[in-house]
Image 1 (cartoon, rainbow, N blue to C red):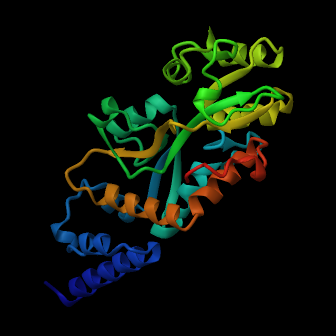
Image 2 (cartoon, helix red, strand yellow):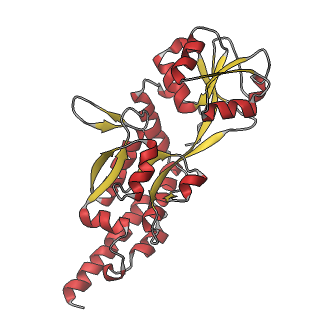
Image 3 (cartoon, rainbow, N blue to C red):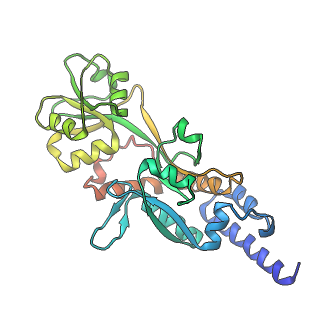
Length: 291
């Protein structure tokens, strides 16, 4: 090994340590990244990102608060873009955007078109083909309540006299039928029909996930208010997905990064900023949101 090789490896180790310390609590990551370049696999995602100086991410047009594209300038913004920008800065790389969908993000990872997929629900089926990072946040379910209707728990709407609208075949319907089976539930073909039922006063509430409820009310405040319902707390995980590979350093690095930014409140700040793009005011974001 030449002196120049020694210097190169030393610099790489210093870089790795700098990145690990930069996110806090990353000692395990620093140790994993300290392996000389010659011993690392060429197909490892983290190595390739750092070598090519490019991080390829899936972007989903119109999926606020996660993604928003300015059609005039082509500029992307949103919760997931804030996350991606921070990762790019930390790794000293540029972002490359690959337009996709929630479902296609998994396929794009498998086809090596992207390095990272955002805002994905870790399901058992997906976990068979890709890896997921630590939880970004538990996406809570609750209800949009008409004006004058008060509810804090599922029991408060689990009554025959309470009319609930949901979109058929969705997670919203499954949650409503599981936790408010005694209510009068109307299953409609689309979210638009659900909102029409709510705005016309034909139902008392709409069971849905927090993002759907908050953004709908931001567009039409006359729909009522949104409440996360408790007893029990009902959530669906929201995470990031990466391509499955034997070397787990890319996944592990992202997991440490997620935990750190959740711990210091940065994730919530980015999330609230993304909701703001959809017209949701910061004071309207429930304090119970665990992000």
